[in-house]
Image 1: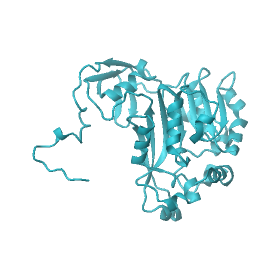
Image 2: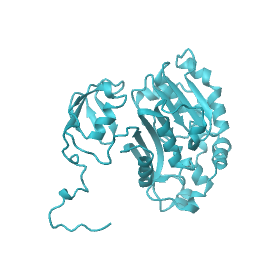
Image 3: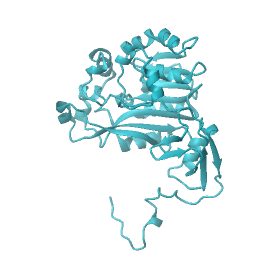
Image 4: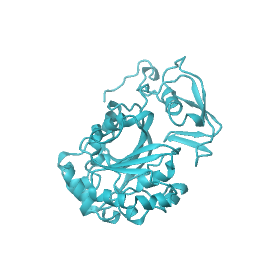
Length: 347
């Protein structure tokens, strides 16, 4: 699928989110109150031209430098600009001029609404597969976000490699996208409507994990996910028998992450100090860390908290001095979990 087709779909065919033919590029209604308040102040024209599939607003953003890949008309850029504050900065990149025209038209409006003496956002026209061609400094971003756009990229690996190159050490890519339960057939991938609706460009979820790891992001962490029901009989028939879901992942730029969850006898204690998270800190879908409770962690989770912007919010117990094998509950492939004489069938 060529860039021109996607540019036409999002610049000319779609004039508002109501023009979408499926629910793939739609964010669910539930969201935290603090984010609802911020979005209520975003300009109506920007909101109307929003086509995302998830929430890409991680916590603890004050002063952060953030890059939004495929920013469109700028809804997420402006929402994040309110959260990073005047000391932070949010940069948006998109390949569709019509979308960027809408985004840029409202910079002064949002600078005034969110109380910044000068706008803390900027927008670049370009392709997210070719981030090295933009005037962006390598290793300069704390966080990279993207909302239902990587599936539209012609080279997903190039997107992730470029993001890894632009992140600071300990930075993260926090993004939502659409994934398939199997590899998309070529004939479906060439369907311009299905591609524009964020379906036929979706990665098979297991291929995504492989590409992420090959791009330098060890141990991808799933944060949230929900099934996509499409709710368009004609298009449902065209994608059958594939199933799709929307998922949010966080990928950390931490070179020491290991391929498996290894146990070093470590633990963390959350201080309850992250804004909007006084009672528990959610790292991913299986790490909900209650305030004040000693929480055992594997070595990878330890690094995701200690070697990132989250370190000041935790106390850390232990070290990497002694290794105890696979972290309990994560050793399904270990031969030590099999009884002697048990026959293991081949896949």
